Image 1 (cartoon, rainbow, N blue to C red):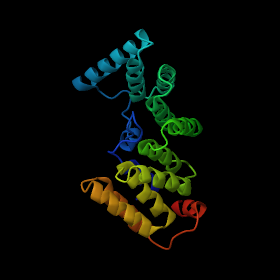
Image 2: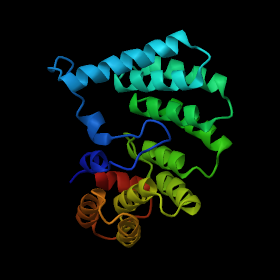
Image 3: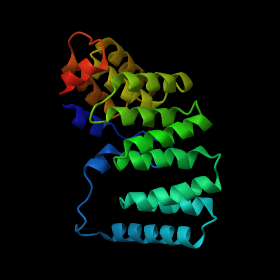
Image 4: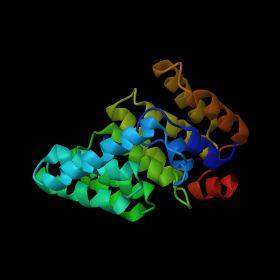
Length: 227
């Protein structure tokens, strides 16, 4: 299983405080002209209502956040960012819109902006393990992954929350990519103890087995091996 497939397969525990990344949903976005079921129509109606509430209640923080979620689900990232920035203006000391701005920009492919917003969230709440896992994910999905930096963020996340599934999943993956099979298996063992039913466990085990070999000394070597 290659790097992209493994990353897309690691789902189910939520990345960030608001949107909860789903790699599978992102990778398998429905075609715009696909037939809509009754439930999808209802969902779209709810999304339209959320957007209207945000427009009609500009000083309502919750309305701005719900409208941003609706825009995000519709892949209308610019509009989602606009509402989240307004939510941040309404509650500048709330980490939630900052983390969400990181999530949206990461999914939109704006890595620099995503990192800026994650850093802002972590300035407010340095021990937020979910945000650190999201930041580490950003380094892992880059065209030129920085495994060392991702590992450092994940280890810090786990010092704050040793049972954080997001961080454990990505730590196992990042260490496997670095060639540190022992470290990757230790992280995987910890993940299994936290959630024995995690669907990520067999995929991570396959990724660790596939990498195998001797540890590589730096992230550049790991990147070369991943290609």
